[in-house]
Length: 260
Image (tube, rainbow, N blue to C red; front, side, top):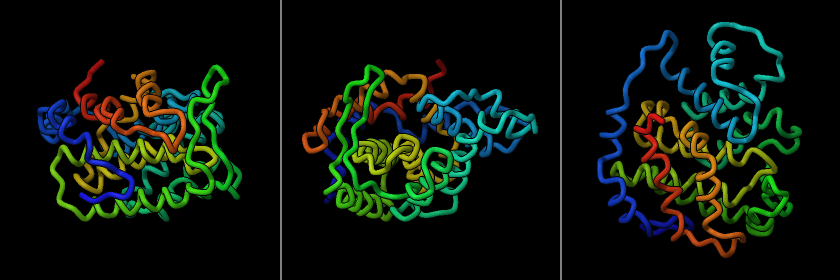
């Protein structure tokens, strides 16, 4: 496949490491009995754990009661997660393209950013700072951020039109997440958007059943590995080494049957 920014470089190693078909792994997920809409339940799981990765003080039990049992909490407690839930709703009936990703970002960043920055591609330098107040990563420079995004969405459009096997689907879904978060095109909400895009691509390729893949919860449970695997590629955007991304790309698929 001829890509502008994605790569099939690690697909062979990925397939060998996964061994069992991702669709078989997905079909073997134990189905739980719940008294609410199945897909709404898993959108809640996605919204809560993607929020928690970003340090939001929200727990699933409380959000579940808020969403499905009409239990009242202070608005500030659920507001950002509500917005993220609305973005997960949005991806069900919209194509995965740059314009719609900007719309989804506007929805999920409603309480994160001023309206003037919601869905707006940044025109300033971006540094990711870690908990020790040190630079963790230097994102794509403002001079190239738009062209890098257009490369990514050219590749996404190409992949959506292709017949992909299950290994390819999960491989590229995770890679889209990783490349997007490395470009880091928004002022805030990049991680939430990247995880949303991984789920979005899976839904487009395998249907609504992808909603139940708890990739956000898996990333949260393994949050140290999540950030460590992102960091492995390098500090500067122009010097990223995607040959070191296999550990990240395997996180979702190996986490499907992880009951820890």
